[in-house]
Image 1 (cartoon, rainbow, N blue to C red):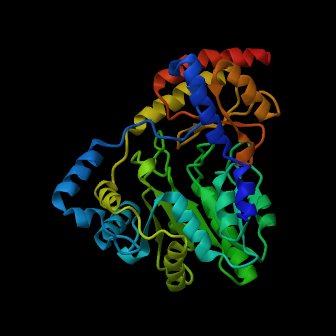
Image 2 (cartoon, rainbow, N blue to C red):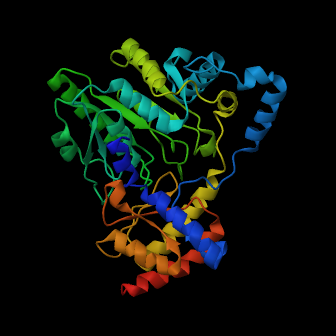
Image 3 (cartoon, rainbow, N blue to C red):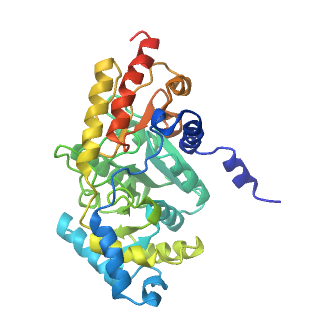
Length: 395
C-alpha cells in the first residue's frame, strides 16, 4: 500500500497551482490576453544578460565532463569561496567556503535544515502570512509547525503572540523577509526585539532556538528599503537563499545554506546538514548553475520593472477603496478581500478573469495575494476590472 500521508497531501493540492492551471484552460477559451493571471510568483523580468553569457563561457571554458559531472556534496569549493567572499563584502561577514552549502534552491535549503535540526517532538514556529509549503516541509521532516496569527495592520511580528507560542519543544523560528505573500520587510526594530526574545527563551529552556531566515526575495526591495542581514542581529541564524527571484532562475534550482561559525553547535550542525542532504537524495546542486551563480552572485534582474508594477497596482487599488499594506519588497500585493470569505471573493473575481489567490492557505483569511511579476500591460488592463469588481460590493 502506498503512503497514506502522501495520498492525503495530494488531496490538498497547492491552491496557487490550481488557479494557475485554471487560467491555462481559460486562455484556450477566451484568449491569453483576456486572462489576468496573478497567481504564480514566476519572475517576469528576464535574467540578466550576463547569465546567458556565463553559461556560454562556462561551456567553452570547461570540458563536458567538468561542466556536467558531480561536484562534492557541499558544492564546488571555488563556487562556495566566491559566494562567501560576496557575502563578506556586502554584509561585512566572515564566511569561509566551508560555511556555505550549495542547494537546489530555497525549498531544498529549508528541507535540509529542517531535517538536520529535527528530533522527535520538535516544533517550528512561523509568522502569518507565510509560504504555505512550510507546512509540508516541516511535517515531512518530522516536525510540527505552529503559526503566529498575523498583525494585519502592519504585518510585522506580534511578539506577545509569538512568545506565547514558544515552548520547550521549539527548535526554530522561520522568518521570510521580504515576505511572500505580503511583501513587507521586517524592520530592524522588529528583528532586534525578536532576537532578544529568542535569547531569553533559549536561556529559559536551556537550549538554542535557531532562527531560520528564508531569503529568496532579499534583493527585491524598493525606494531605499533596507533588508537587515539577520545574522548580524541574532547569531544563531541559518540563512536559506535562492537565486530564483534575484536572478530570475526559478527553473534552474540553485541556492545555498549559509551558517556562521558563531552558530551554536556549528560543527554538528554542518555535519547534520550534509547528512540531511544525503538522505534526502540531494547528491549535489546543479553543477553548471553553481558556476553561473558564483559568477553572477552580485547581480539582479531589472528590479525597477517590479517597482513600477507595484506602484501602478497599489495606487490603483487603494484609490478604488481596497485596503492594503504597501509592500517594501518581493513582488506581491496582499490586500484585504471585499468580504470576509476570501475564497468566495476570488471566485467572484473569476467572472472578470481576474485570477487571485485567497489568503487562507497563507494563514491569513480575508486577504488575497496578487502576484505582480507580470507584464505591466496586464496590470493596466486589469485595473478597470478590479474597479468593476469593487462596484459589486458597493465601493
